[in-house]
Length: 396
Image (cartoon, rainbow, N blue to C red; front, side):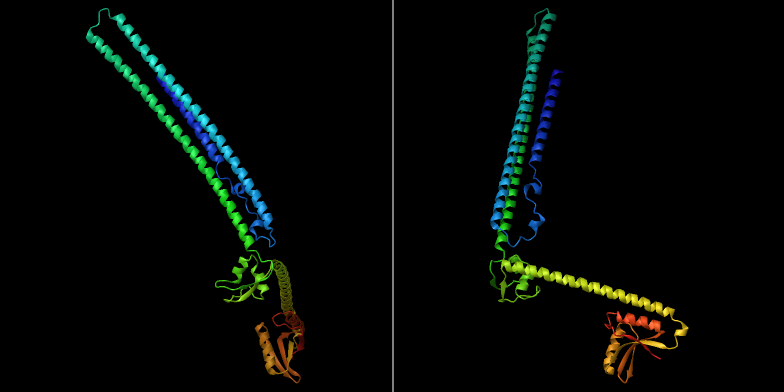
């Protein structure tokens, strides 16, 4: 019973130590996990993602980069300090748990040995008290063998307990070593990641500084594979600016051996402003054209509606004759036919009528003067025919 109680107590202590060790390893693992990109590497802001200004101060960029490297080094040192502190606390807890388990094992073995001796002594006294006659040599030999067997069993039990304790100590030591290796590997990975990010940023800054527009205009001879887009990216300028500096279209293909001008920084800035202004002018013009087109379409729609209403309101008393809308007076029949074709393509019924002053081009006829006036307003507002001189004519 004492053996079972002591064994359960020892197992419980070992399990508790293992749980505490696992929790501490998890805590160290969480603290050494790679931090989000926003904590390790400065996340590029929209200003940093956009093309660098053309007047970048290289010295300022270097100074800012050096300050950020110092901050990263300080963070790495702080992480290493925390990791070392956790490892120290973990080792102390592990050593305490192992010492406690070893002491309980020794206490259990000592108590087991004392209990075995006491049992042997009581058995011997009982045999002496209950046996009045002298033991024979055979009986003494049997008793000696029995005592020897009990001692061997006790020794084997003690050895087994020692072996189990040694196995547990080895497992705990291996687990501690593995946790140390894992923590060190994570720390080295974080340091390498931060170093790689810093190197990439430094290289990007160097490339940006290298590919900036020159301080003064320079001539460039086109090589195989060169194009306006490639050269614009190479010298960090908009392709429209490079094309404008050479009086070319952005979609123009360059010829091998062709000489082009690479504008200076000031020229790039000026051309960029001019391009932005020109784009604004084009946008304003487009908006005005759209407004005019919308206004013309509204006028045409309104004229068509009035024409439809006028045709519905025509009375029989107004239909004494037909009215047409004269849209032009051509010098000859060929010119009249050309104008008639244009009006027919716009959806109107057109006829020509020769007169002494020329050939009339007439749209219609319409019954009633009211409908003819509405038709005239529609023709004058129709952008497809582009005329404003239409007038109502009594046909017959």
